[in-house]
Length: 185
Image (tube, rainbow, N blue to C red):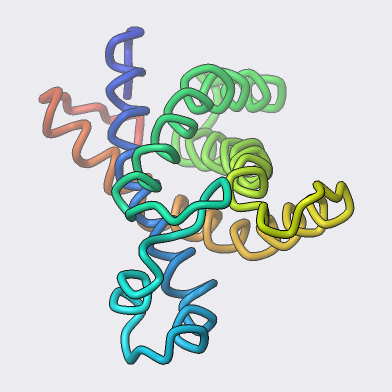
């Protein structure tokens, strides 16, 4: 897989572009869709979001593309600074890359990355989507929102990363960098 810093950054970019769109879709349609439909009386989630004037972030309604851009910036920064390097180091404490089956090693990295990124991104989302209209700030409400998001996001993150997103990213990466790695899945 990635052999140098540029390739690691590109791998992270491909991963985050796919992941952020999946999570925004999941959050808007699956987690909050029925609430949006109930509040607006619309028949589709997208129409409900349009009727509401966007999605609430920082106490104001913003278009979906702004939500995707903000989450992308946070996710890409975290993936490059924390997610990838720390998950690799954690997995290397358990397995030696040169002696471990590549499938086991890569799966362990995916699991470690989800374990690090999901609670961190959920914490950021809890801050971004905190019900600011209900000021003053309440730490218990914030922590409850964070725990709720982790409970919703972790199963989705784990299964989509393990079975869909990472295999797709690895395939795209091999095509883009024209590599025939036999030591990765």
